[in-house]
Length: 115
Image 1 (spheres, rainbow, N blue to C red):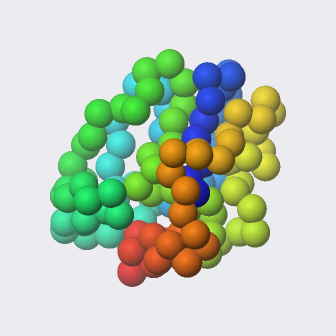
Image 2 (tube, one colour):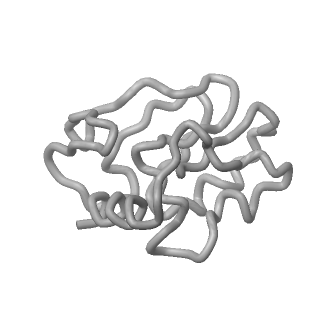
Image 3 (cartoon, helix red, strand yellow):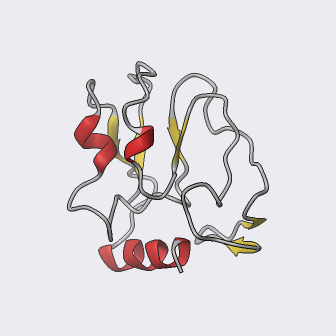
């Protein structure tokens, strides 16, 4: 399952540099698939979204930091636990019940982001 950032976020930014997939963005900032990945050209995400890797997508949140579900692998392939949750001072990086994935699915997503 992906991780989500809740409304308890204090916008400290501690989580963003810890994400190996570049799935975390500051409130109001546009996102793309290229950031912190080795992707080139076009990419088809697990959700079915097809996009140029450098194409900017609208921010998911304008109020607090957010995680792009299509890029979050819960740090599988990099760390034993989600790094955002481990550094968050207010414990607002939580499992996203709406986006449950198996370890195998998370590994496959990681491989797709870092071919």
